[in-house]
Structure formats: C-alpha cells, structure tokens
Length: 502
Image (cartoon, rainbow, N blue to C red; front, side):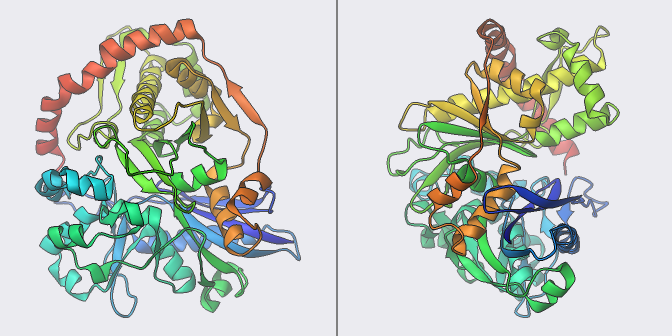
C-alpha cells in the first residue's frame, strides 16, 4: 500500500504521522522541540537550533517509517508547521546561525520603527496584516542587518522553518503563499512579493525564495536522507503550508463557517474568495489559502503554550489539574487571568502586554487558578470570534474545532458555553498533519482534486451544545472584567516589559 506522510513542525513538538489515502493513521512519532536560551546577557532571547530541528525531524520520520507494515511505502510527504521563524543560508547551503523564535522579544525595536509604516492604508491593502507584530519575519531581517551584518553579507536565501526542512529533505528552495505571508513582504491580491514594501523597508529581494501554491511537488527525497530515515529515494516531497491554513483545507471550511484550531497558538479562521473589499479596520491578518484563489482571514493568540505552563506549574499531571478545575465554580471564585504570556495578539496588537492574575485571595485553591487560565483563554477565543465575524462577507453558520483542545471535554464545553453557539468536532485524526499528508497526495495524483482529498478523509461530527444560562453569566464576566483588564494593565505591563524583557 502506498502511504502519505504529514510532517508537522510544531513549536512544542515535531510530529510525523503516516496515513492511508482515507485518512486512517498507520504510524506516528512525536518528539519535543527544545527552545534554547543561549544569551546570558539577554535571558529572554531564545532560538530554535537548526541542528535540533533537523535531528528531531529525521528521528520522527525514521521511527514512523519503521512502524509501517512490511511491503508498504511512503509515496509522498508534505511539511506544515508554525510560521515566521527561519534562518539564512549561504551560497553553499550552509546555515548562518539559528532561528530567532517567535517567543523572543529582541525585535521589538524594529517593530516599533516600522509599526506606523505597516499601518498605512496603502501598505495594509497589500499585506492585509493589520496584526503585523514583532514575530513577522521582516523584523528579523532588520534586526539581523543591524546586529549581525557579517551574516547578512554571506546570506543568499531566507528559509522559514518549513522551507528549511523541505530544503534538507530534497534540496529545493521554495516557499508557499501562506508561509510567505508571514514575512509581511507580499502583495496578497496577486500572490507575489511586494516590490513596493521590499523597497520601502530596505530588504534585499534576492534573499526571498520562489513562491508557489501549496500542493506543488518539489522533488524526490535526497539519497542521504532516504538512508537516514528509511524513506524511499522515490518518495516525493510536496510543498505544504502554514499549519492552521493546512488544517482549514482538510477540514473543508466554507465561507459560512469558522475553524477554531487550538495548539500552541489558537487560531480562529474564515475562508473567502474575495479580499478586495475586506474592511481593513476589522481584520487582524489575512493569509493566502493552500486552495487556489482563496484566502483565510484569521485571528491568532497564544493558547496551548499557557495551558502547558499551567499544568507544569501545578505539578505536571493533566488529569489531576482538570479534576481540580471541575471542582472550581464558574468565575473561579473571583480569580481572572489575562492570557498575554507572549504579548497581546488578536484582535488588538500589544507586544509589550504581559499575562496577569487578578482577584487573588487566600480563598483560592489550585483548581481556581487553573480554571481562571482556562476561562481567560476561552474569553480570548470569544473576543477573536466576535472580531472575525465583522470581517467576513457572510453570516457564520457554524464553528468547527480541531487541535489539542478537542481532546479535553471540559475545555470544549467551557468554550461552547462562553461562545454561546454549538461547536462541531469532526473525528479527524490530527487535522494539521493529516492536511499536510492530503496535500502530498493531491500533489502526486493520489487525489484528483482538493475536493476529493477532503471527502476521502471525512469523518462523523460530534457537537458540543452551549448552556445559554451559563453563557449569559460568562458574557457578564467577559464584558465587565476580562475586556477591562487589557486597558487597565496596558501601561504598567509596558513598564514591566521594558525593564524585565530585554
């Protein structure tokens, strides 16, 4: 049997999952990707070591391939994962340093210098990224120019982390439209690099790789990689895309639906075939889809990263922490949480904002603080859903959910109670790597169309229904406490950030 591999480069774990053409998982392996804090003079600065990325990628592929039935083989693979972070290579293909992580605050100076430029209406109409923040690649370019000029003198290409993995797998230098958008250097309407923005901000255009549609074949796995991973030399590498965009593709999201996908980041995503009339005042970001001539307006914030922190802080036992949350009442006995551990993101951009607990008292137990975190994350989802509804040209019929949160019934029920609308959960196995595997299949003719790819892996849907009485109680807390936290803490958080996050 010919199989398809989805390789998900996540900022928590790297996963390799092998599927049949019908979306059934055959083998999988995941390994944590370490975040490295290497500069003692700047303890908040952090990177992904390229050696770690490539070593772990090979490990998980090799382990997954070793588990497939004898006689089966991987026909094709595609890579998906997080955006923005990347590195430069020289003329010999050698890595020039590591990848500045989206966790790292070092580019805030460059962001502040260019913030007003990126808010100009003519620039917004090209990038469609009102939510441009210090994590976009353009600010890494400008930081490197100022602080690592010797590296920039040698650089011939910039590769995002997914592009880098593709390059190591098959030797091709390319990026897809959805990943290119995370540089804040593209003209969205016609899917090309923006000569205007590139010239205005002073980026060397030759550093940018060719831009292609997701699902485009890149080449065969290199012989050396085949030997190290157990893949065949005839295994095709197909261009994937940004993780949440790839998930939107395989979930078959339509213009009257929203996808809520929760991982390290939480994304609320819509789909549209028309970006000409999108109201700029309401959008956070729009990225090109991996489906031809489509776009995905979206809102984004850190989510699972804070849940991981919370569980680790409270002892590391997920089941015990969730049980404690169940024993805490709605509203967490007055404790509230502002989920800004990596700055404030959609729908308002505040890179100097920080997380906060308020309403702390000696009446609280660990279940209350844990519940406050979960409620705060779901309030942020509610805020993002309300914002993106204003952007789309049609009414939202349904919210479809995917990602790690769907495995947690307590989280999902709380989310649907706070949103006040039903949430549909298709029983797809790991939607993001499945979407990558399906793109690999589309790019190699396993599926004749993207519609066939989606229909081939379709699964039954579970529905979480809201309790509308509980929704009204949550709505009161959302409007009268949660939304006010951001304004009331903005200035003091900025002062703390400038003192402690250098």
